[in-house]
Image (cartoon, rainbow, N blue to C red; front, top):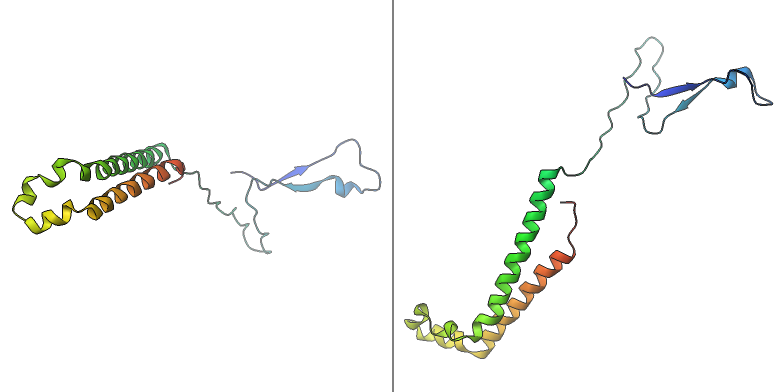
Length: 138
C-alpha cells in the first residue's frame, strides 16, 4: 500500500536558524489522497479512494465515432434526396399517387416541392454541423 506522506531527512547540514526537529518534516505527495489523523485509541484511517475518470475505453470511442459517421451519412443522403427528388418526374408519376388525385395535386404544387427541398437543405446542414462539431468524448 502506498504511504500518504514521505519523510525527508537531512543528514549532514541543517539550514541556518532551524532546529534539528525541523530537519525531519513530513512532506505530502499531491498525487496521493490525504487521510485525516486518527484519534488516540482508534486505528489509523485508510486513504480515501480517489474516483478517477479515465475517459471512454477504445470500444466506446469507436462506437461513438461510428454512430456519428452514420448519422452524418444518413443526414447527407436523405438531404440530397429531399433536395433533388421533388423536381424529378418520379416525384409525381409514381404508383402510390395515381389512385389519390387530391394528394397528387398537393405533391405537385411548387410550394410543397420547395418545402421538401428546404427540409433537405436543413437535413444536410444538420449532418455537416454534427460532423464539424464532433468531439472524442461521448
